[in-house]
Length: 182
Ligand code: SF4
Image 1 (cartoon, rainbow, N blue to C red):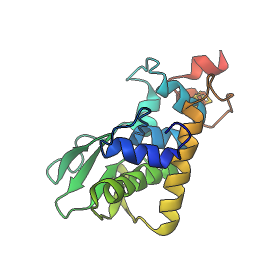
Image 2 (spheres, rainbow, N blue to C red):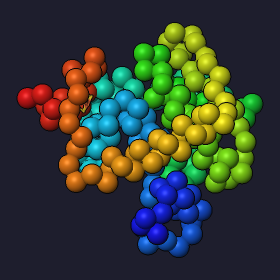
Image 3 (cartoon, protein in one colour):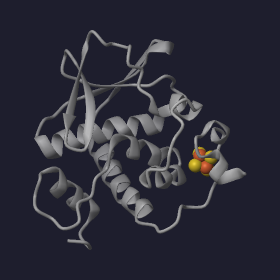
């Protein structure tokens, strides 16, 4: 199944079908793909990350205290998500500065729930510090974006070396800064 579409490989893996070449995408991988493909490659190789580094605060750390009385954590195969008591999937981010990666991460959760568990849900992206909430729905356009991103992620993590560094406004707060610019 190695030449199979990565989306089909991911779905077969998620459904527990016996395949020789399982392919997994986590929510963080989806987010990193839209933040920096080089960062995704490093993450895929399990390179150590300093958990106090600002990059974690920048985009990957969920605020564990926000909505804690109203949300429930759900592990489903390769993803872990939070459900509000009204059934919506919530993704909590410390700031709205990197909205697209967060939207894609949440869209991926909605897509995964739909395709793997046949559960249709809406999502909400929450930025508690800014008192902002943004609804996210799995539209046909988002579905296509998620599936293209899964193929893109497969392309990045299959590389034998990382994509070249491309300077971004947030590089100086990235855990992998030294790998790129020193
Ligand atoms: S320092 Fe910049 S280019 Fe390097 S991995 Fe981090 S975000 Fe990407």
